[in-house]
Image 1 (cartoon, rainbow, N blue to C red):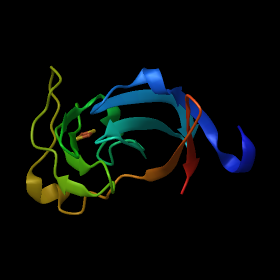
Image 2: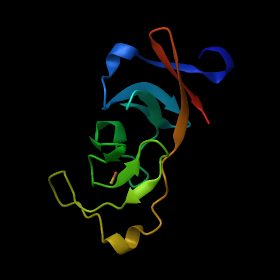
Image 3: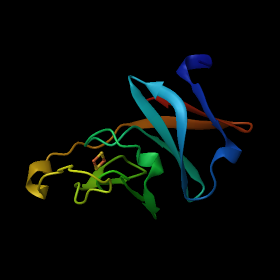
Image 4: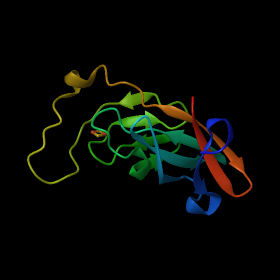
Length: 124
Ligand code: FES
């Protein structure tokens, strides 16, 4: 941990433009993912469906689609913008219907700062 609660999470070379990166940082039990979108860094927690790693999802603009069951979130705000709709793993996994996910919560967002070549995150 560094000063004032900032935690070193990555090096600037760890992720390129419009990429996600899974850090080793856990805050309150969830792994923090970094995103580098349109020249800005963002940090999100895990998917609010079943804790999928959003930083490994498919990025389109400022939206990321969870790699597990395709829920979508706004990377800049953490807002849930689409519900789980398809299962991307093999086996008998049910994700239910869209009706069951009308209240899927937004994911957690975290503060991000760059100091030199290092990226730090902090709880909001
Ligand atoms: S864990 Fe993300 S959509 Fe299911």
